[in-house]
Image (cartoon, rainbow, N blue to C red; front, side, top):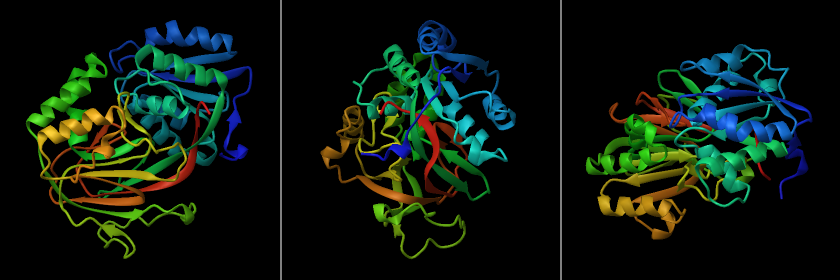
Length: 352
């Protein structure tokens, strides 16, 4: 079991800043907050200040610039994209080390809700979606137990740096994520429709993938310096194939409410769960893998095209700037990227 030092409890009474995107998912976040969340929080002696975002990066600026001392926790009621803004806003503060000790809470209000589904899974709750998932996550907030969570820093060849809590992708999964944005009003069903559309025009991506394999004995020292243009260190592994259908580095169990991609993942396992799919896979097999992923049994199919390896760092170097890259569901320009895990860099409300 985890040592007790990994856990803390919110004070009572408790003051929460709720950052809410009213347009996320099917656009019901504010209604659901008032109907489902607020009555539960009132009973748990959690007072809320609700900040409704009006544009992209609004939450990022709020947490970067605001005096946060008046709140005991920061609650994000949206999809995963708004939490990405919050994490990166906190990391831009001069007092980021102190700011990252503020426990974060995710309440699902988007269409993907991968972190909420992961936390529900880690807590040992049954697989649920929509209002039931929201109720479970609100209950976790009411209990007030928090623990530490790993983050992954992603550095691009053009000099950008992001902190990510969920995953980085290139190829098929990222295409589905971004291409299905136009069906956001469908909620989680947008991903099913997006998957079928991307299967119809299945693409292959050319690039070089290398990684530092995970071993628990390595402790928490950084995996490698960001060194774009330099060869990868000799102790890294270089994947011999250079044609991929997808590359996905995930650090939570769920890629979406109904996609259990990395069943072994935990909030602070110090590990990046790296998946890559080599070219040559048939559309039928790819569809079978995604159907199996709803139960977390895709690796049991022993598909020779799908590879999984736990790593501490990775580098992806596309041969040409083709395809969409995503970080925590947000689109990035396609360019060389290096990622490495930073164990236990932030705190998050969790069920156990």
